[in-house]
Every structure is written in C-alpha cells, then in structure tokens.
Amino acid sequence: MKNKKRTMSEQENKPTVSEPEASSADTMSENATMPRDTMSENEVVPQDTMSEGEGILQDAAGASCAVRKRGKLMGAIDAFFGITARGSDFRREIIAGITTFMAMVYALLVVPGMFPEETVSFGAVYVATALGAIVGTMIMAFLAKMPLAQASGLGATAYVAGTLLGGGLGLTYANSMIFVLFDGAVFVLLTVTGLRKMIFTAIPAEVRIVIPVGIGLFIAFIGFNNAGIVTLHEGSIGFASFNVLSGSLRYCDAIGAFVALLGVVAIGVLSKKDVKGSILWGMLGAAVLYYALLGLGCAWNAEGCREAFSSIGANFEDPFSAFAAWGKESVGQVFAHGFVFSGYLAEHSAGELALLIVTSGLSLCMVDMFDTLGTLYGACARGGLLDEQGNPLRLDKCMLSNAVATCAGAAFGATTVATYVESASGVAAGGKTGFASVITAICFTVAMFLSPIAKLIPSCATAAALIWVGVLMMTSVKDVDWSDPAAALPAFLTVTVMAFGYSISYGIGIGIISCVLVKVCTGKVKEISPVTWIIAALFLLMFLFTN
Image (cartoon, rainbow, N blue to C red):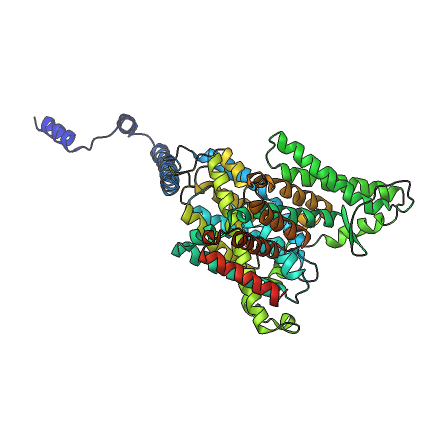
C-alpha cells in the first residue's frame, strides 16, 4: 500500500512531458544498470537535439518578426502615399517611376551642355542638375504625393544660359543663380498667397498660349546651332552644306549635322511607335552612329577625325571629379558670389541692374509657371488624376513643390526646377502616387555618379533631343485664333522675337506690350487689367533703359 501511494504521489508531482520526452525517460530507466560512459552518451543526445530544435524555433521566430516588421513598413508606406486607396500597387508604382526616369534622364545630358564652357564646367552642372532632380522629385513625392518628377527645365535653362550668360551682359554663373533664387522665392509667395492665379490671368491669353511655342523654337535653335545644322557666318544665318562636289566639305564637320538630323528622325519614329524613353534611345543611337562614322573617318585619314577621337580619353574622368568641380563652382555660389555684379555694373548703372533683376525674374517666373501648369494638366489628364472641376489633384501643393525645389536648386547651382511633361509616361504606365516619384529620385541618385559616361555623349546627339523638344512644344500654336489680327499679332511677335532675338524675356515683353497697344487702339482699354498695365510698364522700362 505504501509503495502504491508513493507511486501515485510521484505520478501526481511528475511534470507533464511530451511523448518523445517520456519515451526517452523510460529508456534511461531501463538502461540504469549500463556503464556510466554509455549513460553519459545517452544523456547528451536528447540535450543536443533539444538545443538544435530551440535554435530552429528561434530562427523561425526571428524570420516571422522580420516579416511582420517588413509588413508594417510596407503598410505604413502604403498608408502614407495612399497606394491601395488610389487603386494601385507597389509593382505598378515601381514600373511607373522607372518609366518616368527613362523618359526624362536625357535632361542630365542636355542641360550641362547648354552652358557656355567658360562660365562653368560640365561636371559641376551635371551634379547640380542631378541633385536638383533628386530633391525636386522627392519634394513632389512627400509634399504633393503625386507621380510627377522634376528637374531643371530646358526653357528656364535656355533663358539662363542663352540670355543671361550668353547675352554679353557681363553676368557670372553665380549671378545667374540669383535670378533663379528670386524666381523660386516669388513663386513661393505667389502660391502661398494665392496671387499666382492673378498673375496668370493678367498675361493676355494670346501671349500666354504661345509662350511654350516660342520657348520650343528657342530651344530648337540652340540644338540646330550646336549640331552645326544652322550656322552663323559673317552676320548671316545659313544651313549646313552637305555638297560632296563642292570640294570644301570637311567630313568631320558634316558628321555632327548629319547625325543630329538622323537622331531627330529616329526619336520621331520611336515616339510614333510609343517606345518608352524614345528621346534617350534616340540620343544613344545618335552617339553610337557618331563614333562609328568618326571611326570610318580615322580609317580614311579624314581631317579632324583623329583629333576628335583623341579627345575622348581626355574627357573621361574620375566620376568624383565632377563632385569636386560642383563643390568648387556651383554649390553655395549664389550666396558666396551671387550678389557681386561688378561685371555688369562696369557697363551699366544700378538702376539698370534693378530693372534687369525684376524683369528677368518675372520672365523666369512666368516661364516656370506656364511650364508647370501645362505639364500638370497634361500629365494628370492622361492618368485620370483630375478633380471634379478638371484641375490636377493637389494643384497648390504641386505648385508649391515646384517653387520650393527651385529655391533649393539655386543653392545647389541648378537652374529653375520644373515639372517634366515626361512624367505623363509614368502616369500612363500606372503611376498614381508619390511612391513612383520616390523610385524616379532613386534612379537619379544612381545616375548622378555616371558623369564620365554622360560626358561621352557628343553635342550632336544632345542637339537631336533639343530639336525634338521644340517639336513637342509647338502643339499649343493651334489654339491661337490666327484669323483675328488683334490676337495674331501679339502671338506672332512673342514667338518670333523669342526665336530670332535669342531672348525669352524679350519675346514675352514685346508680346505683352503689343497686346496692350492693340487693345488701346481698338477701343478695348477696359479689357486691360491693372496688373497687365504694371507688367507692360516694367518691360517697357527694360527695353528703354537696359536693352
């Protein structure tokens, strides 16, 4: 009885074990008479097995925790950008971001080549442009949460590089960044206060419509000139000669013009076939063709071809040398040397400088405003990102993103940051949120370290892109009522003065002044708003005292 009670007591106090553990305990009891060495071996086996099992369980728990954390992170990103709420997903947004990058990465190759070499180096502008694109696109992603990308606008860059720096005014690269900073600050003020709409409506419609057309012709002219298609000789403009019978044609000189023309045609064909990144592929194809023809010239001992090939090695630099040039020539120059206008004041008065700053800043602001508004409406309409009134979603935040990015870009040494119309390709690919813009910015970050490769792209290849941009910007010319002389004259003067006068601001100024004069002479003075009078007066003072 005592033994039975003791056995029952032991069973009650014995902890519950799983089936394998009980089996192991029984086995040990049966082998209790075995030698100690054997028992020791048998005791170790279950302990090792348990240790391995615990390790597996810990690894599984860690992996599960990582998955949960990853799930929480992706969920937080989804909630912040509203990816699922807008009917999109991560895969679609990533594809859209890459598509936008491929469509607009040509800006990194084109913008640096638009600046006169004596003002700033290619590498410095390349890094500044890349940083402007990264920061501008990130601001758009997190502030406006829209699938739109930003970078230095070609229209504004053409104004800064062609009019301010290339116009013989005695301005420096640092001085030009002051105008960009002024443009951004004014744009911020206009957006925050709501005055943007007042300025926008104060520009006569016939002038407002054709500003992109004039800028397009201005940019295309730069491309024609850079490629040698249009030449300046003894004060006259002429077309490049391809006459092989003349005896004066140099093979090396003709290559650039020939490649640029073929490049434009290639871009047009690719665009017609809806190839993503058609401008980029057209440029790269033109670059390959250029070097192939240059190689043939070397084989034939054509004059100038060997010299052109020998310069390739000299141009190929360490990618970090571009960052060194950027640190020395671009970043912070707007604050360090931007306010020193000694070169301009050597031949002009302080009053002329004040007028130049106001009118040029106003012109830049208008170029930026019209470019951005046109891009926003075009890109958002393509992706169904318009509200009930037909306006782009988060319009004010998109405009503010553009303005803030321009101010930040000026500090980096980048020209006016604008929303790119190529964003429409990403929207068409399914992008609906700012997460697509994050992906585009990441791609620009990688591209920022590829300046040596970008430097190998010849000017004739980038010229093809500039000419094609001119083609794209011609579309709004159809919206002008050319049958009405009161509308046709200001529109015509705006476009032609921009292109032939090689100045965007002069074109805008002449267009506004002529529109005011036409309305005054036709008895429609009441149609002229007070703001329009003020803008016209400022441009008139510019022509009278600074031109």
